[in-house]
Amino acid sequence: MSTSPRTRTVIGCTLLVTALGAGVTACGSDGNPLSAKPFDAADQISFNGPSGDGKKVDPDKPLELTADSDDGRITDVTAVDATGRQVAGELSADGSRWHSTSPLAANARYTVRVSTEDEDGAPGRKVLTFDTAKPTAKKRLTVKFGPNAGAYGVGQPLTAELSQPVKDRTQRAVVERALRVDSVPSVQGSWYWVDDKELHYRPKDYWPAHATIKARSDLDGVKVSDRLVGGASKALKITTGDSILALTDAATHQMTVYENGKEIQEIPVTTGKPGFDTRNGVKVVLAKQYFVRMRGTSIGIAEGSADSYDLPVYYATQLTFSGEYVHAAPWSVGSQGYENVSHGCTGMSTGNAEWFFDHIHEGDVVKVVNSEGHEMEPFGNGFGDWNVTWKDWRKGSALTGSGQATPNAQDMARLRPESV
Image 1 (spheres, rainbow, N blue to C red):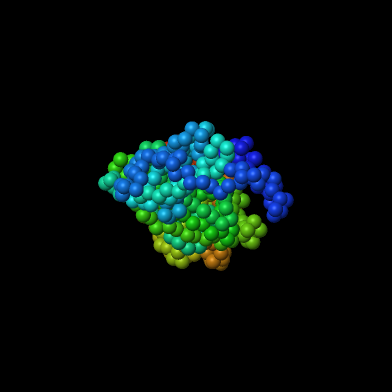
Image 2: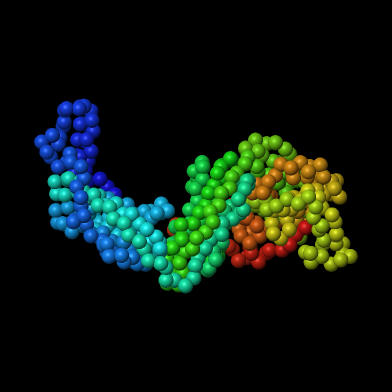
């Protein structure tokens, strides 16, 4: 809200009084109302709810405050519930009316502080409290945040899984506005609607190293639709460690590992051969397994064919749900650093795989460039979130875009299992 010229005069007088010291006044010494304490504005302000009759306010209706006197106006309003959630609102240009622009929560107690001034600029104040009625909607919308609490790499997106589908853009905006993410250090970030029940959150760039990230839902008691009201949800806290980025160049057959921007290791590798080319793009580490048994039959290779295999694989770092890993491949050491001979995974010697396994963590970033494979899917096959440009990512928000963005259907159709 802009400050009126009259208010600026009051502030200027106050500062001058302070500067001149005790016993010397620049204004207000003659009883001018500008120097008085705020008067009780109870008789000047009314709101569209019950007053002292024990009735509760309908949370589905906006809160509205009006200045009853032609000689006064509203200058500021804050409305906060008992949990600290603040209600957004708009004040008319002439200060005659304020109304809420965000929904009230059901079954909550609110405290509203109203500041006013009369025609002479004398400040007034009114504080009112009220309770909202219990929700009438039949279904509760709760949120499950992911991943699990703990420490992750700087590429780890947050997820929000809704208990009920939300399709309407206006309703999505209500939900998204209530999903709060705070980080230390602070970064710019946004939610993206993957589908009707799942959202992902990521910053514009990777999370800072050694950051603390908290996610919570303020949906409890908030009406989303006529049949849907927000329920209580458990908050989430994660942290990040050092920034680890592994860059694999499929053309030079080398992986370079960076820690906090500094190169710490270079490893000769082999990636997917023609027909099984490794996906290009950014992938986020999903999990690590010391031992995985990989079979060609799991990806449609007939047993006994030239491409058939059934192998024990060690130091396996998973990058996609379909089975792309970075792992030990002692059978291809002669090709590592020279040619691509795998079925889609990134293979390296057992010693290098053990080193990588020990230095990589869930949420760390692995990026592949110069492969003949297609781009990593944004969603549905792990965390390909970082392959969406920031401009397009914001289009997937109900607050800054359409809130209806979906992954490229052709990319999703290319999903296939992979292995060694």
